[in-house]
Image 1 (cartoon, rainbow, N blue to C red):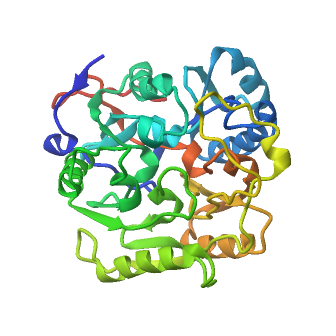
Image 2 (cartoon, helix red, strand yellow):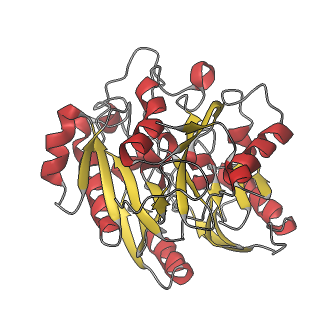
Length: 381
């Protein structure tokens, strides 16, 4: 397959907003025993509910290992495509390709380097070879030309784009020692602009407390449209998240986006009662030697911001908390043109992430197979 050594911005490509039209969505069927307890039985039910909600308005492609293909096929409806592809885990947002497009509607992929959120410095599992190959393999399978960004460590959950030149990131993640320690902040920003076609990078300081991804931005702040974001929030001054979100709010209040607009910020509460992993849940995990293990009572990085925007809906995590309804109410007001799908997501958060983390959108557009000007394909998913 053809891999491009140029930068997307040089070729007129940019990362669209998630709220823009999709061709489809990628998910990966869960199986890894260090992430999904009790043979992933409960996780698979949650993944199924999320996949079916997304499939109401766009195509859903579920990637599965050969030994779990039949299980996925049996649990999912026929409108969902199940595709055999190797992976180490089920975090499609972070291991899948980031897609960019140009003004003519051509779509290409970006293949970042993936090192399990920190590599040998603070990575979460010791072997990530198959995950690191997934983005290129997916683009090859579907016919997308792909940009070679394998010298730069990045996960899809660490970036949010408004499609108009503004990208949100967090310092805690992108400046962590396990990502690109030989690059300065300015150099990382310059690289992001070249790959994402961005004009301005907004650096929030923090993500969600106890987020083991080094605080991905997609768990704390997300665009609902250009110039308008939701921000994870708590009014509880005793909660460590209070000062973290307050600092991020101050950043958003003093910054403007690439078009010079001041941000409209909707405060989206975190669960009132911290979501913590139980001894019973931990008993179902099987950890590999050298893998980061959890402890009973450990707080999980639960956030309602970790939603997925489909063509016709917004799939929102729920935790059995009194703030579940408030989160749905706020997001209903932010997305009046979309249906809100509340999904109980505890069986996903015990794996370390949530709904946005297990999904990766494919923008609507023509598959660019050849990677040069004027060449495109009418192939659809």
